[in-house]
Every structure is written in C-alpha cells, then in structure tokens.
Length: 106
Image (cartoon, rainbow, N blue to C red; front, side, top):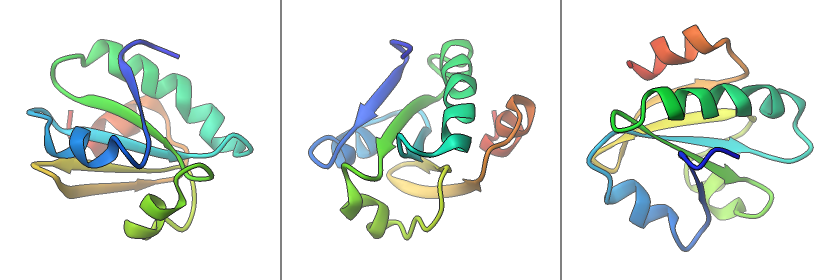
C-alpha cells in the first residue's frame, strides 16, 4: 500500500475527515470484494499524483461496520468525497482512473 493512502478506522475516521484542509476521498472496501481490488491500485496512483491536492483514505467495511452504516454505504466499492467534514460527492462501483479523477473533481 502506498504511503500516500491513509487507513481509517472507527477511532481515526472523524479526526482525519474533519481535520483535513484538502478534500478527503474515503474508499469503503472489503478484502473479499473483487471490484475493490481493481480500484485500490488506481486510488494509490491518484494519491501519489495528487498529493497535497486530495487525501486518499481507505476504510474496511467489515472491520468498521458502524461507519459504513452511518453513511448508508450499501454496496462496495463506494467512494465518498468529504470537504469540510461534509460529503460532497459519492462514487459507487469500480471505474477507470480518468473517470475517478473527473468524478472526484480533480
């Protein structure tokens, strides 16, 4: 995993989301999810290329179900973009890198 991708859990989620000056993309994923495994490396590339413009994070829904429920994540991969602690965009499903960059507004 790239050093530019932050792993979130229930104890760090709010602090990271609310404490970031740049937009935060949270990738809701699970180990057993095939499409999640396809999106993971793409998000790592985006994290490296867009460092300082966006923070890429990952949250395992099996290990942190209460956060997935809090944001009504029903299918994975789901990526939520947070700005100022609020969800501004929702991207559901595996997408190509160019599509993700466009949907994230980068």
